[in-house]
Length: 251
Ligand SMILES: [Zn+2]
Image 1 (tube, helix red, strand yellow):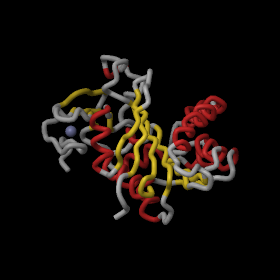
Image 2 (cartoon, protein in one colour):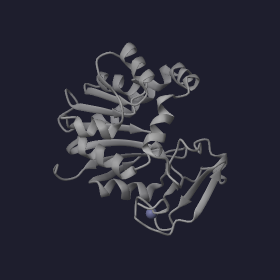
Image 3 (cartoon, protein in one colour):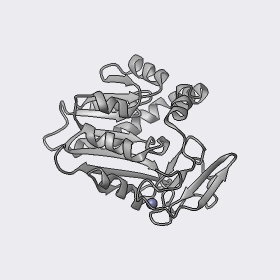
Image 4 (cartoon, protein in one colour):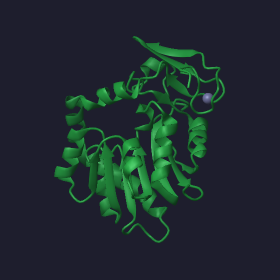
């Protein structure tokens, strides 16, 4: 794919949109996707997350009680979506970090798995929240090898970090059972409260965020991979929080 082509709709009319330092973003005139261009390579992204800012990670873990509270609230949406209940149903947290959501899923009766490229975060999860199955690594590698198919998948604030949104969502969809449910969150560049000036937005942190979605193009990306959004949560902050169901059988 050309560096200037939109990965959601394939559109070629994607003029420069924003820049910060050496980083440049384009915006698709057709679907509104905003993307880093040139995009980072997978190798550059892996290097970026192999050495995460440990100071930031420690601050993140300090907010443990509130993270757990939020995770318990969010897991209810997935539990409610399970016909026949959550007991023993396979749950996957893509980007599980310190294990807050896998812990909440365990409490809700799910059989949780968590995956994250950040080994320190996974070590924290294993030490503080034993019970779930944890993996260190990338999603596409996991999807290529895993034999499990998950009833519920949670993926919060990860999609914006990936270079290839199609490969990422295809991997998620491939890991789900037919009729499985995905809870996904990502920043919303089309939100009414997003700062007018992109560089004033706290999530505009190149090159960590490669893709910026809005409601329409997120729906379009998911539906390309057989995932139909059936609920969008209202969000006061500029973020998208959606629930999607996998339509149809596995190939
Ligand atoms: Zn587009």
